Length: 293
Image (cartoon, rainbow, N blue to C red):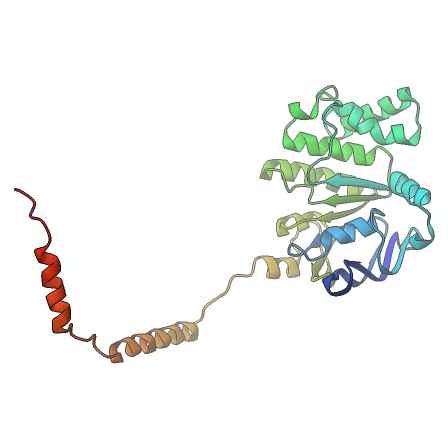
């Protein structure tokens, strides 16, 4: 049974003539244990898809099944419990509470779950150890680097042992070294059996995925299986596309240039100035003051 199953899911915003289509009859099935990269230009519907899958937003049309349950039949409290217990979120901007330490931020989902303080603190420390920040538990977000903040956010997403990890541009605010650290961490999480769904603009990050889905104009345009460590063919073709010129292209360019130059040469010569213009120039010159040498 698939973990995620979307069938003809659409999401519309606005009314009447102002209606915009964020998702256009999307069909997507994701099995337990997959690591899926979602790519596409800005405004293609990637984040909207993440919000629908993560139970943050409701689709306007279509069916969504999560672990075999039809999401449209869930009430508000049931959706909140499913979101809390089965889904872990990782955001581009970290979304850490600045007045809480790293360990307090990680323990926060367990507080909402009603777990006693001693147990949630121990689980939070264990999770910080897992992401390599066991010595930073008492640090505040302002005392951490970008990569460390995202690692804390990953620990917070994992502390409830969710079935699904949703990461929306998890490396968007990080440098290349921190990005690699975060993606390697997500890769390790995927290898332990978690399903990972992440959005990225960087085709290089598809090396960490087992599947790449490319979106455009609210619809899925391409869906391909990939090998870990390799950039997907479609991602490479679309994102790395560089126009190649042939000898025929060069000759066509030269021909066009010659035709443009010919038009300039065939244009009529500029008219000679009239005597009226010459007289006006002499008057203007006579009015100029001589600068003493």
